[in-house]
Length: 554
Image (cartoon, rainbow, N blue to C red; front, top):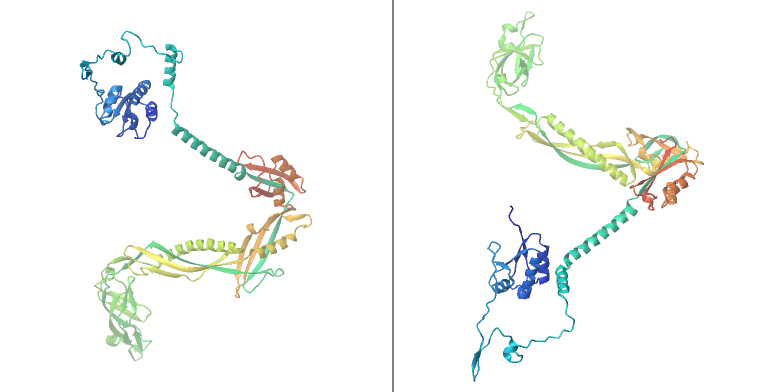
C-alpha cells in the first residue's frame, strides 16, 4: 500500500478565509498541510476556524495547520483542527480554551452568595420566575426541519468563483482573437497567389549579333553595332595554408681531390674554370679553383702522356649537395662541357645526411591556385552585382586579374618547422560590362525585322536579354572587345500582361478565364491558385503572374 500523499499550501497574511477555503477544496490529495504566516488575520477568529474545519470535512480532506503561533493553538483546538510546528513534526489537536466552572461568588455589604451555574442569567437576576418559560415572538413562521436541512445542503454546495482563472481565460481569449484576426488578414490579403498561363499563337524568333564594346565610344552607334563599355575592378587578398612537401639534406658535403688531364693536342692550352662539375654514378662534385692544362707536341705528335706535369692538374672538389651518398671511393669522372679532359678522383669523404622538410615551389604554386580559384569566384559574383546595380550587362568571360603578388612563410627552400607553409596572394580582378539599354535596343531592332509589327509583338519583356548567350572575342590593341550575343524570344499577338492583371483582379476563376479567352490570338488559358482555399484571383496585382507560352506548350 503506497504512502498517503499530501498537498502543501502556503497562505499569505492578506488571504481571506474564502480564498483559503477555495485552495483547500481545489487540492488534489486527501491530506492538506496549511502553512500559516505570523499574525494571519483570517484565522484569528474561532468562527473562521470552524468554517475551515467544516470546509475540510465537506471536501473529505485531513487538514493540518503548520504554525507555532501560540495564540492560534486554542482556537484550532476548539475547532478540532490538527496543528504541527513544522512540516516534519507530528500533528496533534491542541487543547481548547480553559473554562473556569467554579461558582461565581458575589460579595456585597449585606451578604455574600454564590451563583448557581445551572440556572439562566434571567432567573438569577430575579427578572423571570424559575418555572416560567420564556416566550419568543417570531416575525416569520418557523420553518420545518426538512427546509432547514435542504437550505444547509444548498449552502454547502455553494462555491466561491475563481477570479484568477477567469482573468487568465479572458487574456487567452483576447490572444486567440488577435491571432485569428492576423491569420485571417494573411489568408485573405497576403497568401493568395494566382498563376495565369496563356497559350498563344506564337513562334520563336532568333537574334544573333556581333557587337563591339569600345572604350572610345561615347554613345550607342546602332548602325555599326558599337556600344560603350565600363570596366569595374575588385581587389582581393587571401591566404592559404598547405603542407610543405619539399625535402632537403642539410648535412655536410663530402670533399676530396681530382686530377684533370688533357687528352689531346688540338688546343695548345685548356683552362677548366672553378665551378666545373665532374660526375660519376649520377653524383656531381664541383671544382673549387681553376686548372690550366697545356698540350705538348713533339715531331708532330701529341706527347701529353709523357709530360703529366704540364697536361695534368690537381684541384679540390666538393659535393654538389650534402649527404653521405657522396662518400665515394677513388674513381674516374666525366668532366662536364670538356670532351678532351678526363678526371680521376681520390676517395671522397665527410658527407653526412640531415633531411629536413622545406617549402618547395610546387607547394607555393598549389596554394596560389587554390587562392585564385576562390577569389575568382568571389570577385565574379561581386562585380556582376555591381554591374547589375549600374544597369550594366556583365561580360562574365572578360574577367581577368593582374600579376598577383605572392609571399610565403617560410620562403621557398626554407625549413618548415610545423611542416606547413602559409601563402598570401593579392591581386586585382577586372570585368567589362556594357549598358543593358544598348543591348535591348540592338536586340529589339533586329527582332522587329523578323516579325510583323502590325499583328505581332515580342512577348519577352526584356527582349531575350535575360537568357542571351554571349561568346567573347579577342581584345584589340586599342581596348575594343568584340562579342557575339544570341537569344531566342517568343513572338505572338500583342498582349499586355499588366492590362490582363487589372481586368481579372478580384474575379472568380471562370470569369477570369472568359475575359482572357476573348482576346485575339489566345488558344488556351489555365489559372492556378494557391493556397488551396483561394478560389478567386487576388486583388493585389503583384500576386498575379502571367506567363505566355506557345500553343504547342513550349
